[in-house]
Picture 1: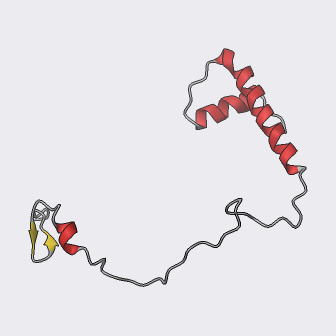
Picture 2: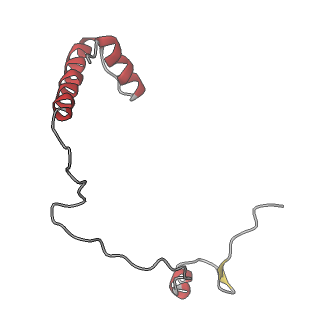
Length: 95
């Protein structure tokens, strides 16, 4: 796949990047270099290679998914400018 100047201009417009007309050939060349690298990556044989989360084989820590109230109501309401009966108090916005 090859990127021409008009495609480079369209990509720049979609990315909301202002590119002068005299800089379009260089931008198209950079896009082509990037696409060439991606094509090289597609040539790598990854058959039988398992996806990795880390280079170190490890199991992620897990916890039981339990719904709680957080047990921090006092700490949370300590930051509120106005708290009443365990809730944030806010001004009325609908009349």
